[in-house]
Image 1 (cartoon, rainbow, N blue to C red):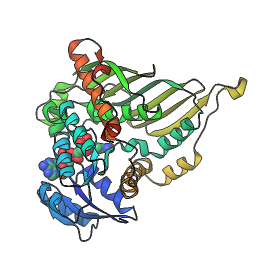
Image 2 (image 1 turned 45 degrees about the vertical axis):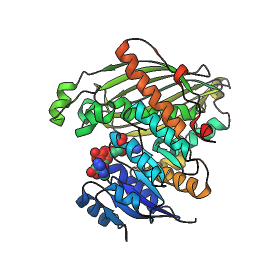
Image 3 (image 1 turned 90 degrees about the horizontal axis):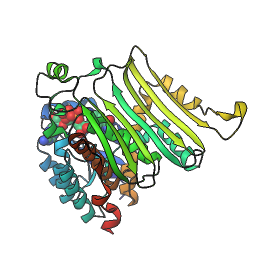
Image 4 (image 1 turned 90 degrees about the vertical axis):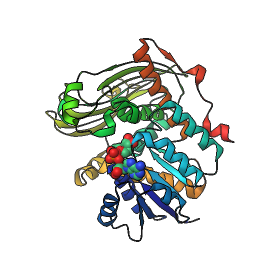
Length: 380
Ligand SMILES: NC(=O)c1ccc[n+]([C@@H]2O[C@H](COP(=O)([O-])OP(=O)(O)OC[C@H]3O[C@@H](n4cnc5c(N)ncnc54)[C@H](O)[C@@H]3O)[C@@H](O)[C@H]2O)c1
């Protein structure tokens, strides 16, 4: 196979980013679009000039088509596991938006189904790994610049004025939770990936609903999820992660996203903020402390990235989707595992579920006793 024929299920904002990614890949062709809102799918087809693609209202019809080799599933969280299982049953390769599922039980069901079809590729859409700044830092880590990373501090915090979510996002039975499952999933994946994917063994967390009234007023609907979560996560190599996430909080920035790594030879921080009083900035620093005097802190700057970013708005974001989609297409065509596997996605879902359980019980949640074996290995 030298061309992968793609179907997109759900053509909202992330579905459109996937479309742009496939359109930039020389060996991918979008042949089908599906959305329960057919008018939206037709409008997206015209807007992105997806020539020749068939539009389906029911995704089952898209899955029944022999013209489709692989699908991107970009629908609300509660549809992830059932749709991905249907797609695997129909023989398709699957790129699934985060999180794996809104519930751990459904996530485990999907992981078991993925393990049954080792020749079908399954990838979870952790696009933040494919940001150019993440890639540069990961290369430095793999080259040993930071030594062993024993602590990571990471978060995605939104200011009180930024909230604009609607519908299923604020309903736990359909989303699985608030900012923890929505934004925390990205930051946990990045931290674990930077650290070499150690397995989480225990979590302790708290969740807060300080802005429920504002969220209800804004959505005009039900709100039963947290607006802020914080957690302490222990990993099987002795390292730890501290996480904080919010959809609404009293911070200076509109949107503050950060990953800070503490290694035996060096440290690193990627930080970006948008909006709010703090303005807009994206920066990455890598500091090594092996020298002395002025050499003690070495700032690794990325002038090439900065120049490109300045000339192309949202460069990092668009690159992240292009790189993610390219990894998926290339992994299918080469018959290799993609970067972000079902094992990574399930480990993170266990952590998220463990944090919610810890918040409810007031105790630490132990994960190791119930930790699944590496799913990809189990399939072999
Ligand atoms: N990676 C990222 O940066 C990123 C960003 C935003 C959202 N997401 C993820 O993408 C997913 C979708 O988020 P969203 O904000 O686009 O949600 P959304 O509610 O806008 O839904 C996306 C699309 O799916 C369609 N849809 C809903 N039910 C369907 C069905 N049964 N069959 C076919 N289409 C259906 C909707 O009509 C809509 O066009 C979520 O899981 C979210 O976590 C990821």
